Amino acid sequence: MSDDEQQGEDGAGGRGRIGVQIYEQVEQLVKEHGISRTEAFQRLSEETGRRAGTVAANYYRIARQRGGGRARRAPRATTGVPARRGRRPRLAGGDIEAALAQVQSALDELAGAVRRQEAEMASLREGAEQLRELRKWMSKNVR
Image 1: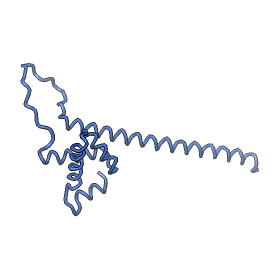
Image 2 (image 1 turned 180 degrees about the horizontal axis):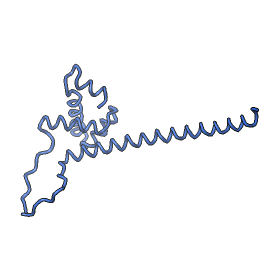
Image 3 (image 1 turned 180 degrees about the vertical axis):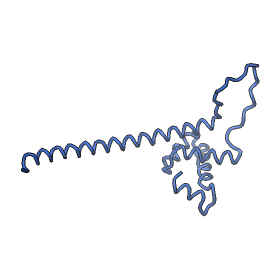
Image 4 (image 1 turned 30 degrees about the vertical axis):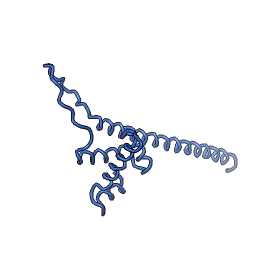
């Protein structure tokens, strides 16, 4: 969480203010534009500069507090076959959306880091070439 988000949640407006704002903005985008929550998370991410995963996490935290989100399914009928051990539990639809938003955010962050690293490598190559040229000039002109 960024310092701005932390201050907003713990600051003068009271704990959770930003989460409530995000929840309301997502709900408004979904209702007015008929888009998925994931799309709404991405739009808010672009508008606010927060990562989409952060937006999703704030949204679902408030949704859980309000008892919102998806309705729980009725338990499945058992077939008499015991469940396999080590099997991961299935995620609810909202949890999947939040997880996907976090993965997308991490991939975007990684792509940005790779782009910055490529730019730095190009700059270093240019500097190395200038150093080679300077050494060549010095070997010819300095005795």
